[in-house]
Length: 246
Image (cartoon, rainbow, N blue to C red):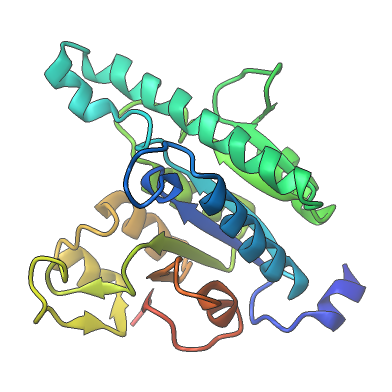
């Protein structure tokens, strides 16, 4: 690890990247898993690793199934949430496979035991893979219903001792309102955790903000699809919206 730290050009040693399931879809919504987007993720993760950064990923499953809307189709919330966790594992395996095929050593880790497909989550296993230079892709959320993958991201970031949580979106930060619906919406450059909670900002749920506040993990919300934004964030440049202690 000493050699990696000497060559690092990042402000951060270990980060967690939160990807929504929808981020893996093509722009038209036709393919649940876009090969082009998976390739883009691979390129950005490789660039992050080149900075000497250990990278963990939490991925959602909304491109395949969401638990809460399932209630409208006669599926109870608990069952729906478990179905959503399985959807996140499909995405985690797709990311792992794409990374590995392109020369980036990666391991999928599941919160629910499915040893034929992935390692079962333990903090020791996750940290071991990261220290060996592997990208860790967490799936199955927290392993419990009623918790979002944003909360899973904050939890895993806390458990592995991440220096930063990066929330990947399709917009360049947190706004006062939805900038798509209101072009006059104002973007925040920085927020405190408390401000984010008081404003009830929908970019992450309250449990995720609270976990990061408790463990003093800064959050950057940024446009993952803007060229080089991930690398710029890791270098400490002003990107998106930074949420931190006051």
